Length: 617
Image 1 (cartoon, one colour):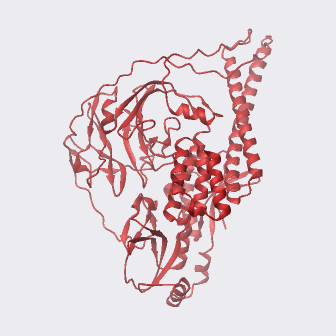
Image 2 (cartoon, one colour):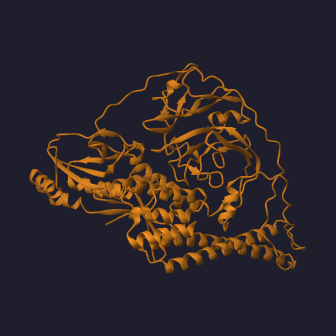
Image 3 (cartoon, rainbow, N blue to C red):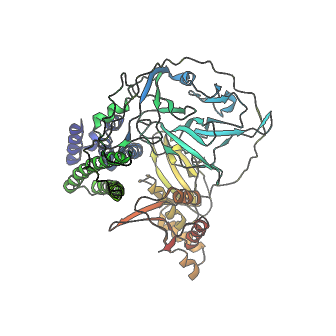
């Protein structure tokens, strides 16, 4: 299918007949993505983005391209969990087949906890048998599903339900939360965080210092897939877990899996597409695999754990060889590629793989040093170690398939709880450009006095959901002859508007343009700028210096930006974190800032948390 699709794209581009391609080109790319063929899907999606005349189609292609890039990253290192059970359960009440060790039962969120009636109001809540201090649930909120919590105040009174503090909720959907018994880990499903499509599975840990939930971690393939994966529930000891997925199922059913968890699972690379597809099916082992081969150990070894170092070295060398072969193929394709956009994308991928290779090679050096130290210790005792044994990477032995016949367990009624009324705050944010959890959409304002600048994202044949605007607020909707025109932001000055336009374009609104109006009538940008300059006094020399563009340099991090620093930056500013690699040096920075004062405020805030930074123009 790959060669057919590439040939079709090539003919379309060469003849200028791209618009005559079948309407199903997005569907074809999606089918490739669902088959884990992320590189091929990304190639087709990039062509759609570059040549489609439909802004809605380009936006959807951009969204799916991000999924493909995430998928390629997630398939670099793959864990193969032991699947000890698999069965089909009905989708409308799948959670009632979960056998949970923690005493308690499932309930469903009552209709009065939803602001609107929904065709899919599936929101299970686990009610522990013991007195619970808090309940976690997902509800439909301002255009998408979010995870909320309510905390017990007294025996009969609870706090108003509020969205989780921290990084869990996004402008898209977060559903099916499950809190670990110790209250420190929250498992949930989301289609808004970094994933390969559909709902992926995530976990977030509670940060007692900030009193918030930390940046979620994708559980990775094969737990997450391009399909919908929901409700990950580990047992009390963390040795097994249950979750459901829509992979290989019809619309009204889900597959329920029971898998074995390992504290330090082995992750391998170098699997073929066919092997990845097979791993993704999560088929249970009907018989145990052969036990790992016995690794010969030096007869005179004073430490029986020495052979583990040889196993580790063999595994690292195998991973190094596989990654070098992958890099060789990538470099060959890069040298033959003529498209500048594709070359830039491939260059980024090559740099990421080279970083992985450097990390593996550093691990090999550490293991060799450890082996040398062990042999030196034997020599110091007068023992001559045997020649290094020939070893192969160990194979994981899977347990035999156990009985897995989950039984339906009737739900209980959601407890009748009273909540104190929330405090409502009213404010006018129509002129404050910002990024919210979800965009705030207003009707298009008419007749506003003075010069006004707005960012037009495009013209659409149908209404666009608020979630598609990636949290940018305010958004204004204008209806013109059954067409929908959307604008992001509202600005009094051209400088503010042009700065916001750069930020909007970085979030994949590549067709966004700046528009202007004077006293409610649309006008050309030069006319609006001239009017604005006539109405405002000439800037002082000090004001001129504040317009100087600058960046806040976070530092050089060859192995990637530390998670603690990344979280601190995201919590303090909506500016993008930029990575720049020059002559082998990887530098991370935040910006650009048009005001040095803004950069200085961020620098001071990070300094109080122990991070040293510098400001550069």
